[in-house]
Image (cartoon, rainbow, N blue to C red; front, side):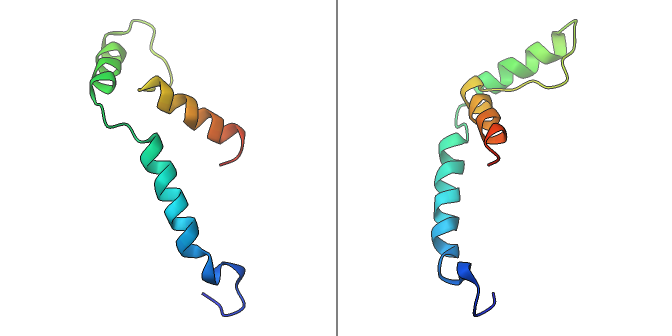
Amino acid sequence: MKDESYFKYKWQDIKEKEEKIFNFLESKNFSSIVKEYIRSVEDKHVKHRYTAPKIQAFFIYLGRVFGM
């Protein structure tokens, strides 16, 4: 990193915040993922994308809307 970079002393803080957000959004329960996988395999009308768990999909959508 360059000496005159604005992020020279802030990169560690940014990294910690990103890890907190990732850990908050990351699902620890796989049962809803397995259920969605089974549903996608058995679905007669295939979707372009299946998301599970729903709360994680919601936060990902919000992140895309707000450019995160």
